[in-house]
Image (tube, rainbow, N blue to C red; front, side, top):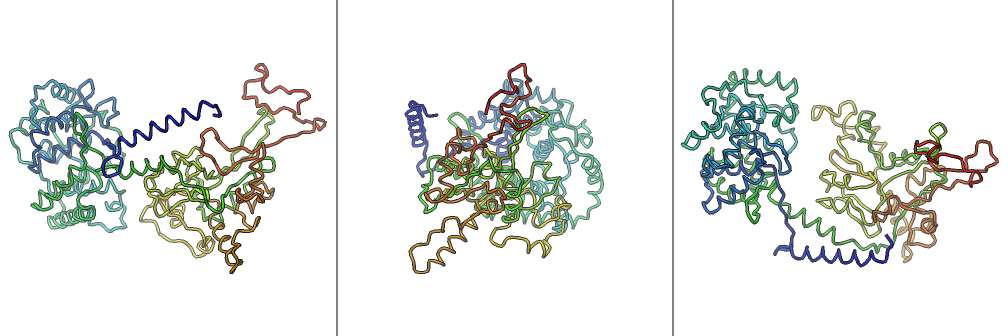
Amino acid sequence: MSSPELFPRVSEAAARLTGFLQRTQVADGSWSVPYTGPNFLLPLYVITTHLTRRPIPESERPRFVAGLLKPQLPDGSVGLHEESVKGAVFTSSISYVALRLLGEKPDRPELEKIRGWIHASGTPVKAAAWGKFILALLNLYPWSGVTPVPPELYLLPKWFPLQPINISGYVRIVYLPMAYFYGRRWQAPLDPVLRELRRELYPQGYGEIKWKKHRADLAPTDNLVPESLPVRLLMPLVQKLEPLVPAWIRRKALKLTYEHILYEDEQSDYIRQAPVNACYNTLAHYLEGQADRVEKSWAKLPLYLWQHPDHTACQGFTSSKVWDTGFTLQGMTNPPLDGEYQWAMVVDLSTCTGCNACVTACTAENNIPIVGKDQVMKGREMHWIRVDRYFTGEPEQPEAVAQPVACMQCENAPCETVCPVNATVHNEEGLNVMAYNRCIGTRYCANNCPYKVRRFNFFDYNQRALDKLYWGPVAPKGTEETIKLQKNPNVTVRMRGVMEKCTFCVQRIEEAKITAKVKARDSANIRIPVGSLKTACQQACPADAIVFGDMKNEKEEVGQLRNLPQNYGLLEYLNVRPRLTYLGRVRNPNPAMPGARTSYIPSHGHGDENGHGKKEEGAH
């Protein structure tokens, strides 16, 4: 890393990168790249144009056709994703339908290959549930063979587990219009093309198929998540009970679902969250005869399209422009570390005993929830500090080294460059700080952290009992008063869906600054006195193995320790420049002591014949 040739090579690479970014920056100052979505998005877009009588202009059709054929695999099928190596009946069927709706002839070689693969895979009766649903809208599949999506569930109380408003966001907004269509049992009027498609897709004869028995009949390529036993038992029951639902209840449910669709569209200015519900909601407005809402929808729907040089594609979202621009700026810039203080921490591994007092103190100080054995076994522990153990010597008589690991407060933090909402940023004092109310829980920061010290709140641990975490909205919510009194009022209590990690006890830092200002009164000396500020882990350490302070101040011990030759940072070669460093463990055994080891070369389990694990006489 210290090679004299390295600096000019890095500088040259940085210059090339800067030049590329300058060339790719668009007129409004942003950077934008295609956010490629699944292969069922473009067919659904084309199908929506047909169902709402908004045909794609003849001049644009070749680009749509090219986009539909681009993901076709050598066997003629179309996979779920751009990276798919095998096809699915779902995406192959609706891609074929979309190509035919665009005017492509069935004897075109590419269409013949798709159709042949669909037939060999069992025809669309083997398609996944979404495929059957889309084909039902086109009158290419009867509703009797579709998995029920009853709109009456929206009439249930909000606390009821099956109430759709309690489903996660993306699934909920897609379920909403699907329930609306299923409740109406609407199907497109048969036209000559749709009649031809019935014959082309079902060589066994459309009228000869027993549709009900094919509701859960899936090809292996489409059966990615097999139905659970409760679902298999429940769905036939729902199908039998559905005819018993009074008509007035169905009308009330449909009215409510359409109202929810309106709320979604008005709140998002008709952009919606994703192209699936954008297409479905547009069709819902068309069925309701809301011409003005259909116009507003089609004004925004093309935002999901991306124009490649040779074809049109459909993105998973309208744009990732803000995201990409944010990442680009974060990658090109680094905040100046010019604060009055520059905080750092040093841990002396020679004195650390691995007692875990630091872990306990940190938990109490920072309101870290106790998640229980079950969650820890799933890798969902919440401690901001962990104590790693390293072993040396023979397995029969190993010696251990304990190493406390917390957030390294990296100056060149990899977590910051991947956060799409700037929830984790750097301040001028060298701290990697968190804005909890900005965090949306993507967990990209945890994935990009080489030290794995970030923790995610999978549940609302501070509001739910540990034995009721999976109860969802049914679980009683609240905390006992005695537990509330246990919390530190100077530290935010985090909620479900938020990332958290060590902050170097930033609340204590701010408190020390305020105290120094109060004591200074009219004096200009408002610096925090040396040694007066301690983090919770430092204060609790019985061996004084943890030292914290301003490394910029020559009088502070932390700066002196960082200059020692045995000071090192974990994974230094990554160039993340951690502010938390370690003093290497120094052993100086007395060889005259019984059983003293004078060699600490680990055996790695290879045995003495490989030269490992042997005692080196006279070594110190």
